[in-house]
Image 1 (cartoon, rainbow over the protein chains, first blue to last red):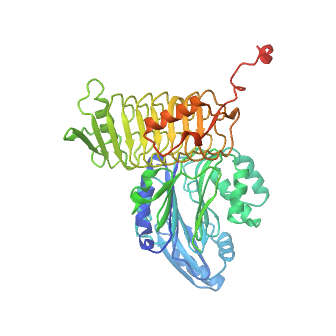
Image 2: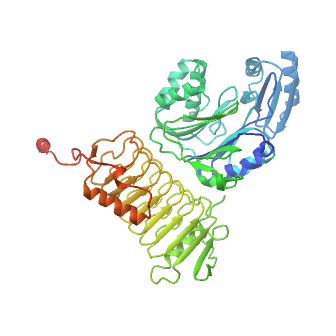
Image 3: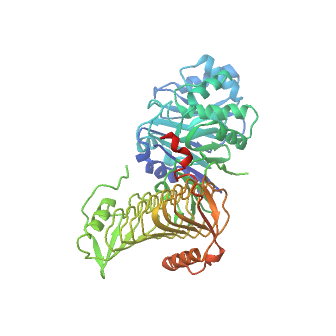
Length: 298
Length: 245
């Protein structure tokens, strides 16, 4: 099973309530995915430099020391705050520079996401526990996508839960399963893409990363994904400016979209949309198979 | 978790002979049990369901001549296995609305998701908006009227009954079709294996006229529709293959 949900705001009316509106949407999908949950929220954008979400299993990890180390090593400035097991670091440097430094000097720290505005937060457990853990209801932003997991293809672990980062400000959530992920993983590994789990969605995320590195636009990468990924799936892809939805050509996995003047919301089931303002009069429809839907702010 | 399937035995309120079940207070199990309790003897004919909020399995397995109005969007399998009841959904529905219906009338005021009327044997399903993929898949005698368009693989392996579409049809319409009758007013993106366009004869105009009448549709002219049916090349035994047995 698994449940996916997304909320994209067309204007700033609900930006301060993004997390509050999204919390019941994610919890409503508990029955489709009680194993783990996660979300990628876009907001609090950095003008220059890079924002990273870092994770350490010890809640008392010394993030201040890490910030100092980065400042000294890269001769730069770091703003940071902690949110449970993760810390959000805003560094006045290139993404690659910071990621390289962390990889070589602090491999005890996991990089969950990097970009100008993305923050990926995920955990094993019931969605209601996870939204509480990361204080989702207090979050502001322009758009957010989330996932509740019922594992089929790999173990129930934090690393195997969604969203998966696919590059700067990009991430992926998936409902379904891929049947050619083992072979595709090997092919992508030969192209230099790294994988941390046996998870099939991570392969789809790796594939998108690979295509984007090859110079594809998001649309082209998704067109190629429709040709390459074998299986059944509804995918939602978070981008810096919005999100995209695509279903496999058979459309086995459910998806419903609701649109008003203020937002576009997507979910695996309508139940996840019932708490949104103005949903009674929203345009509600089912996305077509093998069609790429993109909503982005200019 | 927001599960709504456990019975709480909330008493059913009636007002002027109309039962009102508010799913903000009662569970889906309460609702369905109360509807099933009408099987032996009908004590309440009219039912109003409030706050459905996309819950699954609403008014499933009803087998009495009840009139049920669901005020809002329903989830999966709404009005499944219906016999005799007249069920109206004043909103959209999820997958499998009126699946395996035997008789009666199910009317969806909004859009329906995939597999609407799947495997249904009888009765009438009217969808006033659009229907998703696989509308009328393996239909076995139900009549389905869609005022909007239908998605891909509609009427897949349709065996009997009528699927009439006032809008357009998606890819692979009527794939591996048996003897269901298909009528489409708009465009058909592609026909499935063994499905072909056929001549509209007087009996087909009559069949559609009668269907519109039963569905209460007055703004459609049967002569605007094209007919599609089975080429009967796939499901018939071919004597050329006798050697294989």
